Image (tube, rainbow, N blue to C red):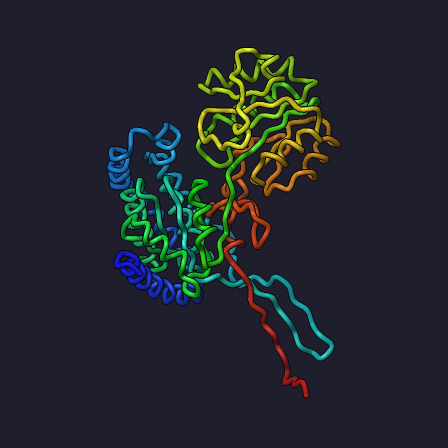
Length: 422
């Protein structure tokens, strides 16, 4: 092992030792104590808002000029966004306690009573990139669910993440909890990520939240269970029965509200029946907001000014003001397109025909499917989870927005009256 790798292992070992000890005390802390930590952290975040903005400005000034506008938007913190983070902490605090829930209970003929009870996972490693608010969301959800968390933000957001971390520590101290319940890597050294991925038996779950290369590295190298997501290759399908006014409003939001989030629509699928009359208006609406397009031949036959799509465009998560467009022959054709190019994240259908909508909803294998709503509602807060720690697109343990319940496992409690097996 190289000297750099050995140093990273030592640093991580110290963080994990403190996190493991803190997780035991946090799991035993009452709901009121955990909630108090979140309310006090929200208070501290508001009090530190000017310092957080100043730290964020350091990150923005140092940001490479080749980063696009969507990346800069994800990194930027304003007073309004800091207030939203503080409110998010308070919303999580007000949610029902996920720890200690009785998930099931039953009796056996021998008189034993069995209970399945929700319990914290333990120590979570959270790896995220340019959005510093992710650290606040992750910390809030982990505190509420009784888990200690070790955060590793991207190098571009290091100053911002540290400033947010300071507010979280204030909240934990005020509630009499161990500050090590929420820790952050001391640097953006990639060797520390490697050490975290190899920490089998020390870290209970790793959650990566970022681009394709980050997720692929985590899945390739991890010796720790991973709760991962694929790209947000999300589709909005406009069915022949769609209300045109609704379709225009919903698509504009789904693509352009925030182009850099994983819930943004990246591909428009429009039914051949409605495309000749509706597609020009959709292109006009989006183009007026700065969107550009990559369209198939049938779409270009309707709007000749559209740029031609390359084969790889329908498999690209743009995270920018770019929309891929394909004309399809009904629900089955739309589902086939999604099966070929999608990432099992979020799909939406705009339709007045309930039978067509049901066929679409039941026909995809994506974690989230929507009817007559923007794909940007794929968000933990919008689901009523208070916040989210990520969007899971796998098929084990959790799917869709990962909130409090998904950050618990369970134990079995068996209550007897002296029974023996004889």
